[in-house]
Length: 124
Image (cartoon, rainbow, N blue to C red; front, side, top):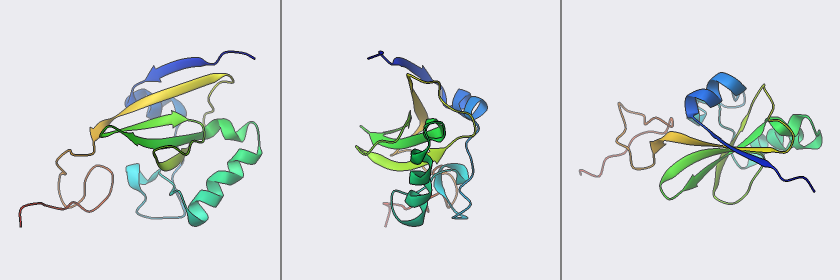
């Protein structure tokens, strides 16, 4: 069995290199309109990409761990928050991690936070 190459890249490099595909199933999709949910028709759409060895290399999992978000190449279940699909594919035998510049507890700007969810305030 071949050992997988592990890479860590920046969020800017991810967007510039892999070209995420917009989620056309939902107008208000998080992560700039790119994230697919972990249930229903959006998950089914992502799972269709797992049936093709080449297509599955364009599937990424958005995970939350220790207050941070990450994109991990591949389809994962643990700590999953959603999925992304990309035009450019990950090389065979390569795993990529992208640390997102947003923390879960970041202050939102405007009525929506950086993930596209309506901001809430604890000051009531």
